[in-house]
Amino acid sequence: MMRLHFSDTDLRRITFAPAPNPLWETVLSVRLMRGAPTGRIWKRPGVRRLHRQVKDSLQKRAGVLAPLVAPKSPVPGFLLQPDAGDFATSVELVRQTHDEQLSIELGLLSPAQQAGRWAGELAGGAPWARQTLADDLCGYFASTVEPLWPQIQAEAAADRALRSETLLRGGVDALLATLHPDCHWRPPTLNIPVPGDHDFPLRGRGLVLIPSYFVPRPMVMYRDHAATVLVYPIFAADRSTGPSDVLGRLIGRTRAAVLATLRDPATTTSVAERVGISLASASEHTTVLRNAGLISTTRTGGAVLHALTPLGEALLYSDPNADS
Image (cartoon, rainbow, N blue to C red; front, side, top):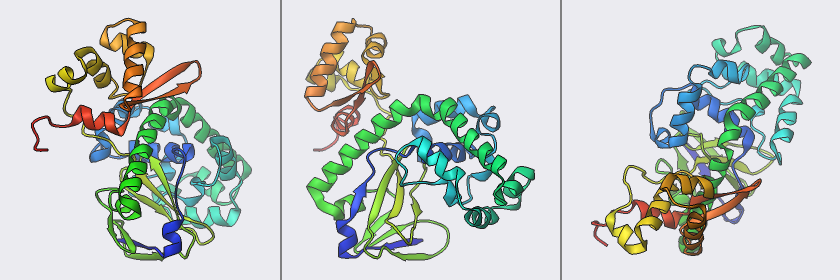
């Protein structure tokens, strides 16, 4: 168990990252894809689709990154750059990792992870080994993570809205108490299930919360010089049920179908194709749903991407026969 101890100053210095971290998502994606498809995280349609796509080509896609991130092993700290502003900067910081840090953190990996000439050369700080890692990080992101990025951003935005609403309604106690089912908030301590027994006072530096599409359970990066980082799984509603007739009568069958098809974020054109309506009709319905707070719309290049908001998910997946 890991226990994060908050002072009053730490509670005032809880911040949310504006979006998922592309480098972390790249690394955590490889780690997740190397494991068995079990647990809550595999309920995400995007995760299941990605596993089908990469299960026979993961080593080729990830290159030297794959052995560094075994499913049940800690992620080397130099692969996690939470303060970088963008993916390119993150990769450059990885490439410039100090020799001593490389040697120490690679030395903590299993013998299997350290096997091979490349790992030994990287531990020694060889420029060609560093560049190989940087190239494979970029290659895997471009081929595997980047195509999913609009969906990841949309789900993260919905999660952020949910956390913000929780904070507004219940304060910091409610935020930390509902962060993840496996975490337990017993003021002033957040208990996080991890191997071993650890106590970390945050020492007034606060906590940065980063949502992740690919992390299966909360993951902590404790830093002596800066705020501790807690990466947590993006909230995903139970998608096992579909829209009911009650919902159709409430907002109209076509509009309910548009809402239902946004279980997975989509452009206006995709909505029209999925529901079988005209582009103009799809635009009209998404505008009404957005104005009602049931979906959010973000621009990606020349298109717009629609996604369910927490309110939209609650309406779509609620049980109409449940007691109120």
